[in-house]
Image 1 (cartoon, helix red, strand yellow):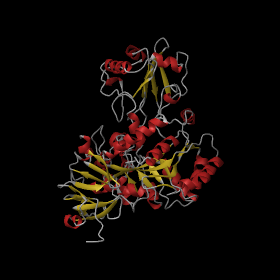
Image 2: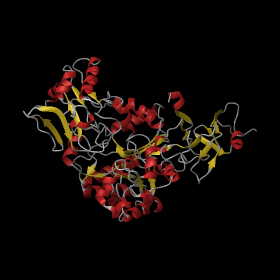
Image 3: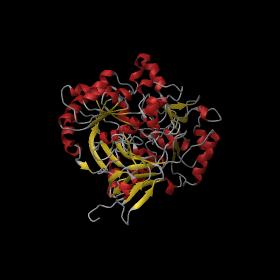
Image 4: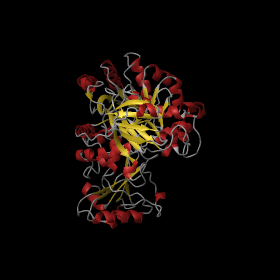
Length: 563
């Protein structure tokens, strides 16, 4: 029939979970970057032409691509730049691993490795090693004396507890100028010494954002702009491989990360839709400086001011000034931001922070912040300056009480969760801290949804897959005890899938363009062997797609990858 649009690709014979009003279809047709039709096999097959590629689903499930509400995408690929110590269960094995690296490294060149322990958490303790102790400089000296060696500490938000540890050999200590007379730049960073007062090469940090790499070991190689660009595409593929088609970087990103995203997009190599918020640099800024920054930057940070369906820069991250000495030390290494990818001096004193937020609201800008206390700050601002409709974001709230939940819903504030932490890793510890009477305030997704708030699931890069987060939101099991924490806050499987898709689209301001499988929306979808609505609870967190499609283009094919 003339005039009928023909599909570029048809997927049929499956279970299409549209997440649009509970509709389940059999097939869908794609044309260009858009969904052409969704319906039964016969209806959709009528759109096939001689050049249409047909995918026979054979009962497999199709659903919208996942949208990670707080992803830190760039960190994943950076891990691939550093040699791994994974699998080392003795100090002797660490020594052999470093010795092998030295054999392939020109003398005098730094050897910098990933942290001790296993990804994604890199949790480490003396009990991890057969000798019952951590390696020290003498062990690394036995591996090589011709190379400075540094075992980097984990980014503090990966491990479940502190301290983190980095380890250097004698050559690295010498180049860094560290000896028995060296004083730590911060009480949170311990330079361990032996009985004779000599450095052991071990450095312990009681901080969730590392210090040693930006101070004592500033001479050691860190991530360059070229590193970030080369690894960003690997990061995108890692997220595509678990079904993620879009991300929201709610912690804000520094200029070096923005540059990498832009360069990848300009080269046409993006495989992941990304919405970025700016991480400001406010070192030494006054209240007036903060307000002037907003006014100066407002035009480029308004919604849709910069970008397209693949990459958009809008809004800013805001936080109170905490640990001013340590923040200054970290920021002194700018523009290098290490694993963080955000500026370390984004924090402001209370009055300047409120002035910044009022100015942002007046300019119609989006703002994101982390932790429960910032919900109260947002609500205080909202009493004087309207924020409704701006979709401000609270990420990582450990607890929210009924008053905060109501305020969040009333003002259209979005919550991005950290179920990996507050459901899985530390829910029992949270319960012990707040008490049984406040159990239902712990990451209260049920209460938020019932109040009409938007909740987007998020990985925080520990690990990259949203499927454990979906499971955690449904089951709320603490791994250390096996206890279900706040069972009244469990949500249904379908609600969890919506939080990982349609709510993520709303977070990005794209609910009219993606997040459900409907004609006219962007063709962002995944194909799964299992039905995520009915697969067993045990299998849910390990789900992974066979195909991930973004904008009608296959960006992940498990068969082609050999998985």
